[in-house]
Image (tube, rainbow, N blue to C red; front, side):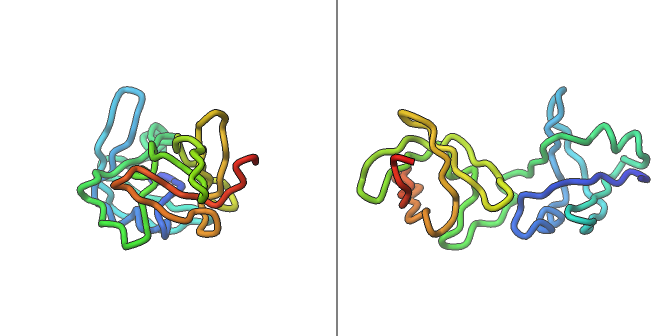
Length: 150
């Protein structure tokens, strides 16, 4: 209504996305930069209002598209924290040294995020401290404690 757009945020906490002044929407015709005017929690998601988007019809055109911010605008992760984008493409190995494949992408599943590792076969490994043992971005390696046969 009145130009508000509902969204699902992948930031932690979800409201953190509202701290960025300019969002880049990934539209079929290319990227479109939009300045945020205001935003807030709404139900199980967020709603935001953009400069120049004043009615329902204009807002509907923005629905269903990914939102990005420039990496240079993002804060450095705290020690032991990582942006998902930094993990993509890393080699994944078992704690005993067996290679499992390469992290292809991450799925934001309802219970927790899941790493999709592509090797001799596809593996879905929960992205939780119990299974994620070490991340060495400089070496391009993620070590997990996950049954290699699963």
